[in-house]
Image (cartoon, rainbow, N blue to C red; front, side, top):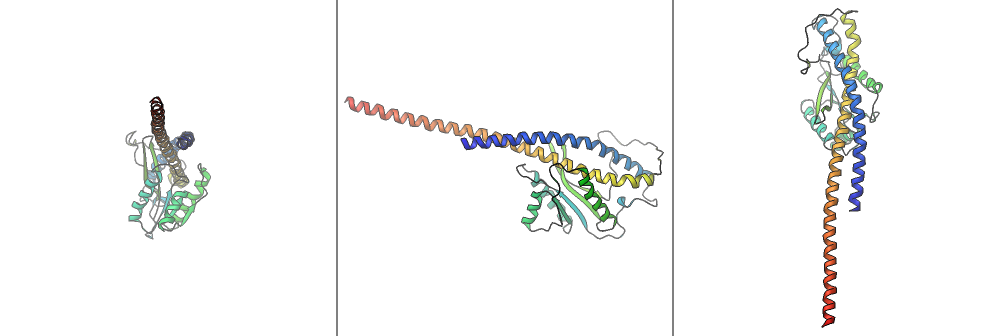
Amino acid sequence: MKAVGNIERITKTMQMIATARFQAMQKRAVAAQAYTRKIAEVVSELADSVGSDAEGVHPLLLQPEESTGKVAVLVLTSNRGLCGGYNANIIRKVNEFFREHDDAHLEVSGKKGHAYFKFIGRKVDVYHDEFDDSPSYEEIEAVANTYMKDFVAGKYDAVYVIYTAFISMARQEAKAVQLLPMQPPEADKDHGAKAETMYDFSPEPEVLLAELLPVTVKTRLYQCFNESLVSEQLARMIAMKSATDSAGKMKKSLGRQYNRARQTAITTELSEIIGGAAALDQ
């Protein structure tokens, strides 16, 4: 009972820590989400203005002229455990991805993902151990710059990110999204189709597109990290709450068993005393 009580206090403390981290990371993700969505809309308008057949279309929007048949994938996992099925869902998504791209260039962020691929004997081409529980935009920017440089150089046909998207408190989904070549965002279903509005751009759309496209790729990757961290803390919070509830139930069950055993022992002792006293009276 004491051991279970100690475990209950530990899991309760971990639940409170995960709750505090979740709230902080959720605010950060929501704050960045509005900027990410808006800059993607602007880039979409610019891409429509330039057109797909126009000369000088930015290379981040186009497939490489000479296909290599190879893609790169970045897998975002957690550095710590005790977060329920968070990592298992990502690994399941990764295995689905490898059915189509078995020879993909694999990059991993997070100790749990790195340990899994080491266990199954799959080579990890790049392991990002520089990210902590709250990576900065500058750290993500450096990774995004490397991807854009390699993609433009024709090293990969596409770059993907596999992470856990935070959709709502009740729903988090492991996704494989294409980071490059960048595709214009679809119309927001909650706000209806995109309005047909004519814009005058200054400077020219090609110049603005060249300036904003790299920023859009960086912010998209940054948002993937943010949502992944929010989902991780939410999964840990739920897992620790479940563990705390289970420990509480187990402690009550053990308490009942202990009381039954104690009452049985007392009853046995009383019976022996009464039996002995009756024997003396005879």
